[in-house]
Amino acid sequence: MALLVPASSVLSALVALMVFRASAWACLLCFTSYNERLQICQIFAGLESPDLGKCEEAFTDAFKGLLDTEINYDERGHLHDAFTQMTHFLQEMATAQGSFRVAFPDAAKKMEKVILQLKEAQACIPPCGLQEVARRFRCRGCYSTVCDLPLDCPVKDVTVTRGQQAMFSCTVNFQLPKEEITYSWKFAGGGIRTQDLSYFREIPRAQGYLARIRPVQPTHGGTFSCVITHDQRPLARLYFFLNVTGPPPRGETELQVSFREVLRWAPREAEMIEPWRPSLGELLARPEALTPGNQCLLAAAVALASAGVTVLAW
Image (cartoon, rainbow, N blue to C red; front, side, top):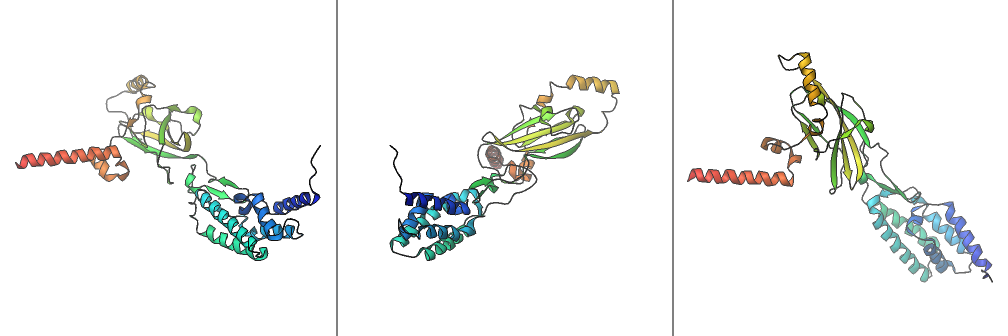
């Protein structure tokens, strides 16, 4: 036999659903439960009071100003704690026979002040990349969103004279996570300028955000791609189109050049990028090159030089 539910309870629930649906997805609904809000109004107005529906309507009306609020995604915990404290405060007000018509607007104003004090999310920095530091939480829908930017960055053109050095820097203008960042490189040969991933092949030896080719040969002409990954999730793909210019070495015939390039094709492409090992001058000129390993090498060099000076002085 089915249990009969009192008609007054059913009516109250239907009224509550209609009222809360009218201003759906405000911050109030993201950080408080329906039972919590209903309990507060039951304490204020009474379980069977005709003012119960008016209390629920006043509750949602007071917080309509927070409907389109956006906050820093990392500040969700702070805002949730603030709403928890607010519900406790309202319960105390209701128990003390306070008026919900006064308590709700006052609580909404306090929450607006709390939101203004939260740390703001960083602005999106074009033109590309998955920028987690700019992730925002939207109260209209209770969901998070990131910058509407493509993962692929525009192709950068790099022109290098044959026999010289080419260097690519896989860096972006937005903040990356501090840990678990990896870099992988690919190459699309044949002198093509493309972002089509089907043309690219892995370059196993290339690691780190800096890569160098020396000496540059015509077979190196094409597009190089660097993928920045955090915890196996791509954050950005950068592209560098290398255009090799300049005549062949003096004394070589066109046939000799073609024959030598055929011999150097394919097998050497996987080894074309060498790990960047900065010199002392490059370490001092590029602050980003002072990695922990390079700092240890620099300290060892300074200690060795100091010891040499001491020996010469003796």
